[in-house]
Image 1 (cartoon, rainbow, N blue to C red):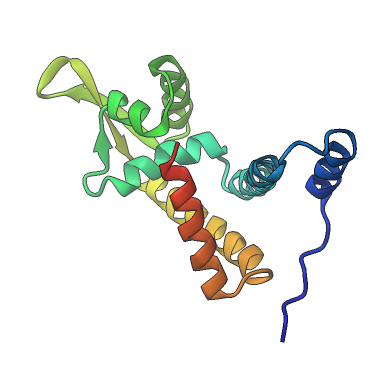
Image 2 (tube, helix red, strand yellow):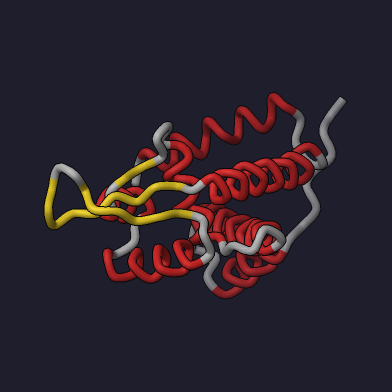
Length: 167
């Protein structure tokens, strides 16, 4: 039994237009990266909407999740947070200000560095990040489960890991 081909999508239309005017071009990379970009954008928008239910943005989730993943006592320096979330220290300060004001984390002096700070996830922040990561993963499972079986999802994951390692 052969699998049904995937329905045509906007990327197919773009590559078909290029083929019509520039048949000499190999547009497979354009199609691959175009689809990755479109999937990332669509899922990013859905995740952002999901996290808003918990009163946080995707960027704020990233900060809370980084603290949560660090393990007890859920404390990191602003520099460690910036490195993990790929934010400048200035961008991180703005996020930390908002999250601290909401009671989701606290900042305190670093006992090992007079000039340094430690950022600690609060109990309320831990509850919100735990609830929001669960909700986000449930939504992602629903999307994947409606399209790919477990073996296909693992295969796609392996191929994307291979592609990402080349960058």
